Length: 301
Ligand SMILES: CCCCC/C=C\C/C=C\C/C=C\C/C=C\CCCC(=O)SCCNC(=O)CCNC(=O)[C@H](O)C(C)(C)COP(=O)(O)O
Ligand SMILES: Nc1ncnc2c1ncn2[C@@H]1O[C@H](COP(=O)(O)O)[C@@H](OP(=O)(O)O)[C@H]1O
Image 1 (cartoon, rainbow, N blue to C red):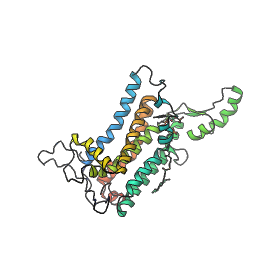
Image 2: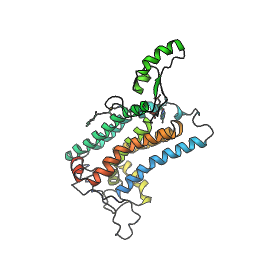
Image 3: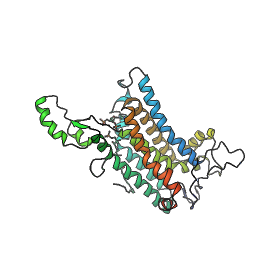
Image 4: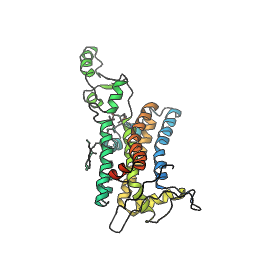
């Protein structure tokens, strides 16, 4: 990757004698290391998995005889993974992150919580509140979307139209029994699953690599080592296994959203909203602005 890795400021501790080394950047001059992936390469590799997943899901949906209407377990909105996990997606992500953060030393912990706060604020702005309705609902209203009354009886519908037109959030529309229709309906699932996954990869990856390589100092990780490292890190600590399990679930649910729900464009805008805060903080600001780095710290060091 072209961007330089942040410089070391110290090391976060897992346990007293279990120090995570600075994520070392790949050294192109070292013989035999040209195919090694630095932690940044691994993060970008993980991030590129999500648009590919959405493309694969959408292509499958378009090519398969009738996947959109197919009545499968994962095409049902009430499936337990959707109801208990994705619908509380930020809560589960928060739990996994807090368990991870509790293992860091206190100076690193405060800065990790600050990064979590920024990610949480972005989730709130997109899905809950943005100086009024959240960003996803403001986009929907700006593209001529409306809360349509659900009552098929024209007498009642007329009364309801007045009320429904005063409804400015998808949540209120649902509570009123209406249907949020007509505008550009950015996929909240694609947003949440992408945003939460990129946040967790960014925060957990240095720890996962450290556990999976038993703290081995090296210029990077080869392609063939990626899965063995993740499996060894899951076997080494329950917290790593929990984090990876949640990441696998988020990836699977993203694939299901790609196959069964929304248009290409709605999935694309959900994905853009999902990478926006990660790209600004983790890819750009923390790498190129020492002041931002000194305030927010860098995961894993
Ligand atoms: C207001 C800003 C808060 C910033 C926080 C600041 C500092 C935090 C610092 C430290 C935190 C320490 C402890 C935090 C402890 C607990 C916090 C828990 C916060 C939560 O996660 S509560 C949220 C639970 N709700 C969810 O997870 C809902 C997720 N679901 C959705 O967003 C939507 O359902 C959807 C987008 C997936 C789909 O939309 P719909 O289809 O349903 O319209
Ligand atoms: N992977 C998935 N599994 C089940 N339901 C999903 C899903 N992805 C999206 N949905 C459902 O499709 C609708 C639009 O989702 P979103 O806009 O969040 O992407 C939501 O319906 P409900 O709001 O009726 O629950 C949501 O629950």
